[in-house]
Image 1 (cartoon, helix red, strand yellow):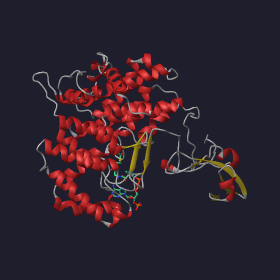
Image 2 (cartoon, helix red, strand yellow; image 1 turned 135 degrees about the vertical axis):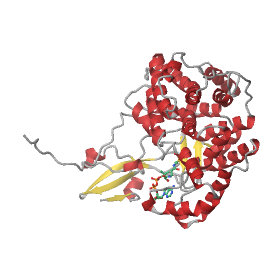
Image 3 (cartoon, helix red, strand yellow; image 1 turned 60 degrees about the horizontal axis):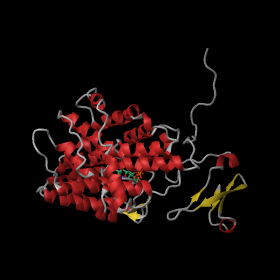
Image 4 (cartoon, helix red, strand yellow; image 1 turned 90 degrees about the horizontal axis):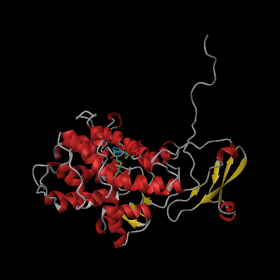
Length: 436
Ligand code: ACO
């Protein structure tokens, strides 16, 4: 089988690629995005050739056309609606980023005021949901609680689950963005046996989240502006990331017409895995295990030894084969937080910086283009702010909710979208008779 990608026919004949299979050429249209690689539209591959494509992990397969986020993994570039992540992280805030991701443009001052007001109108959760929490064990992982409680939102807010109604989609969007921090903070408070702290709508999105996590009813809580800004930036950095595993999960769940709360719950479940959102937790645990700079070579050697099954957590990325642009912002944010909280002597920071230095010079990591990803420094930062490791992925889920919902809405509104239903290469037994 050969693919004549740049054959004259492809260049001149309405841009098509020709696939030769069993001596029979078949043409497939090429489709071009605004930037990034073009795609071969193989939707008719099976009908025309009797063959499926095989691509475990979707390394070469686009599942949708999207206008939201773009990654150039070789350049180390990430764009939200065209804007570079570094610029958004520097000049914008998380709620304005939500508006941008959802609507395609940055908000005007008036639009931002309206959006902020709307979101703040939805920050409380149904009071009966508090009883839902008490059904969980106190030592449950907060991600387990998140999967359950967010899934249960559809039982409390079924007046916004008609996915064919744009108004329902809009209200469900606002509810998800507004209630996610409240639910996340409740999961945390429940795990440590503290009373739930209600949202305060006079505070900005991230400061309100911090007070719901760290305030107690018996004394005033003052939000540290450096910490609030840092967490807001962490939320911006995690807000969307193209068709990653959890976003694809949300799209796949949504493709059957499932309600938005159920779809987001499926995204949370996927995010929990250590190869995805669980990596910041795993990265911090690894840094703690390494403990001192002297032990780094031992761990580097282990990471290079395939039989050990060990990987340097916080290193490598499916798409970025150059420095993750979010990791650069994260590293700076990490230093800012440790300075502001007077924790710059954190031994884990020393281990992290030295590990990064050594790995970036090591042939194994250089040749495989394994650079630190966003999770490498986010764990140290979140721990310094006061979050326990179990909460790290929960914070990621709070931030990624807007990406999931923006992508889900785009999918619902896309006339080309159909139920997601991959095919398979069956390698099990062929038909046989049941023994009587
Ligand atoms: N440490 C050591 N070796 C590694 C690492 C690592 N962290 N990551 C990849 N490799 C090696 C693999 O062993 C493989 O080697 P080989 O070609 O000799 O077989 C090669 O690099 C390619 O690795 P793959 O697993 O094929 O790459 P893939 O794109 O499938 O995986 C992933 C990407 C899952 C992120 C991987 O790099 C990893 O497990 N990293 C650690 C976990 C992590 O930090 N995840 C966070 C991802 S970012 C996010 O979700 C926000």
